[in-house]
Image (cartoon, rainbow, N blue to C red; front, side, top):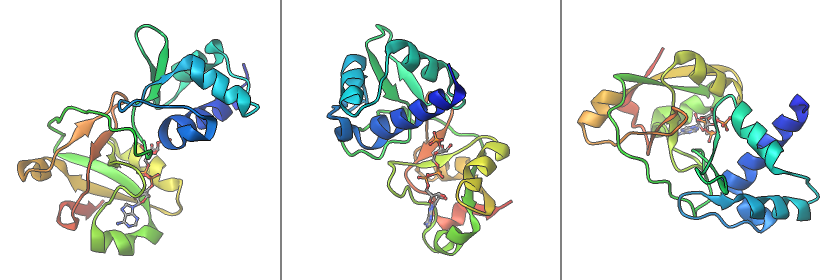
Length: 182
Ligand code: HQG
């Protein structure tokens, strides 16, 4: 199976399982699950050929473990990163490490210095445990700036933190006072 086919399919799955399920007539439940059969038939109407083997390969090879398949093998979901309003994943609040990192681009800094980190179209601000991961995320948007977030200090003041199955840390917003430049 070619890497291009896997990458293309992964992007398509992110699009329909995080952002626009309605684009292929797919319905996600509030936990983000979609029936794999409905995903395959919805994709087919869109002219895209998916089968269970391809889907499983994308799930298994995803570098960031973006997707998971239910124990009975019938359903699939994205483990984080949703913008679609119908999905509200129930994460358990968890104690974060003292420091988490967020990679962004220089062009967003004026606004971040005023508003702090906000989720944009997604449900949460995404934070990483490793500087390298954060920096790779920021590079997607331009000249990277890596920010340090005083996560435990935030939690001590009542902010909640969650960790998705794939290790990404999530919180609703990060006020400016908890952010410093590396
Ligand atoms: C920025 C990838 C202006 C924020 C990654 C970011 C991640 C602000 C952008 C996941 C701002 C939002 C998410 C403010 C934040 N003013 N800009 N006040 N506050 N921003 O893509 O964190 O490959 O929604 O810094 O690994 O970049 O998709 O979030 O640059 O986990 O699986 O607004 O996406 O995973 O961008 O990335 P995004 P993100 P996947």
